[in-house]
Length: 188
View 1: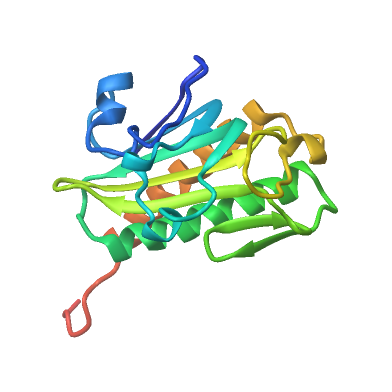
View 2: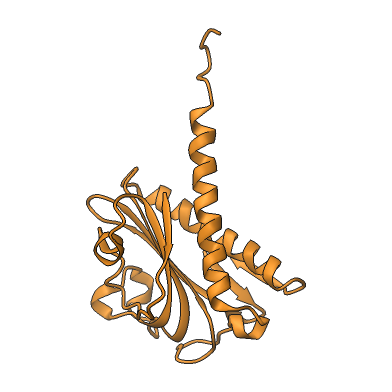
């Protein structure tokens, strides 16, 4: 799996959570995770989470986004597992970048106190599994109480790049772990 940080500010509106958006934006073919910084304004027609359709909306003025696409299996359960692993990896990154900060993970959401730090969704297309995960870089523009990387003194770009590196390393390790296991009953 390849990872890439997009330097250009990009507003996430939900349309990026589709098959081959990473290919069309970066030229990367196959399994990949890309990160970028920008606002978030998810349009109703792009809302993937049915629970959010009647909610206050999904928005933020300044966020660090990760879009992850995998062609290995079009499996929503596996995509949700990846989403949860990604949230845990983000919490680990923040624990390293902001030692002593009490970050709580609840499923795929990260919190600092009663301020929501992240948003996330996993879905599938006809050819791939997709995850979007984003963390507030600064507060503002969200319809709910938030916390942000600025509250922790964490540089958004450093966080995004570190998270992408962790995703890539973890996936490489998973592929290697799968390839070195012998099936039960196999003779030497």
